[in-house]
Image 1 (cartoon, one colour):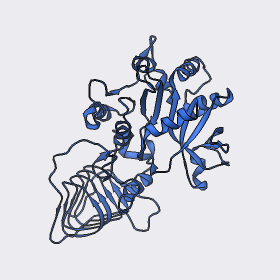
Image 2: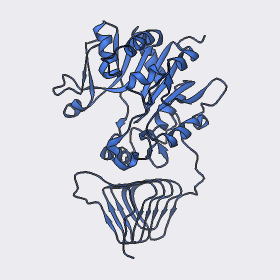
Image 3: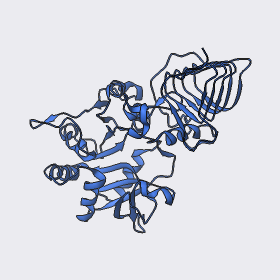
Length: 379
């Protein structure tokens, strides 16, 4: 057996309710991002770039599109004889129809046989709904060097936001001594990124016990991590210094897209040394009309721009008619903005049409307006 073999399991079954209409009929990890990508492209590309050969994608809610998308492992180079992406929805086990994953730990427990069949030394568990680049091989090296039972990736967040996250309190050697799940008065600002490396044999024993515990929520943050701390297992923090964004709300999804407008943005989708792979598109190059006015914009292939685009991101196939204005906004694939329409501080869902002379959003609004249905304009 290959030594230090690591298998990845991506938790991609969340409802994504804070993304409102974007996830009513589409799983959160399948939501579009960055012109032509989907959110799931980031953890999958990270796995491919980190030389992880086998990846399980655990899906659940509104997963038809996500299932078919993730199953095409060739997008990330994970389709050879020794590698693959495996879609793993909830299933019957021991004659009991679970129907859903009851928690993040339960999602792994239901797939113990899949993990066993690949015989890994370590299991990498990932959230499928964050935007970031990470070399998981470096994290594994840190895990082995520390002789850890579990290593948890963390990132400092503003102290005023720390109560929204699972917070890791560490000693001087970065050993985790306390875990607080969304504390009202956080003691530190080291937020869990939802990225864990476990020694598989040990985790397997813990999960087997957790499945039998009727009091458990079957969740890593609420049950597994606290139990390991109680049992005085060795837990270490792995401090991540790169770009990372939890795109769980309309505002944060908009912000992550807008970050791409900075030519020195830390995510850098043009970085050839750490490519983010996605579905190929046969769209033509973007067309910028003679009357178009463009200022600080991220415009993807297939776009047709004849109006004004300022401080905005346009996804594949978006169209901006003459006289239309797109300001501080994100247009997802196939959006059409007709003549004279004005879109300001908005995120427009894929395929939506904004009618002639319609006005959407406001420069003074506190939150970003989600436009998920056609907006009628002048007839």
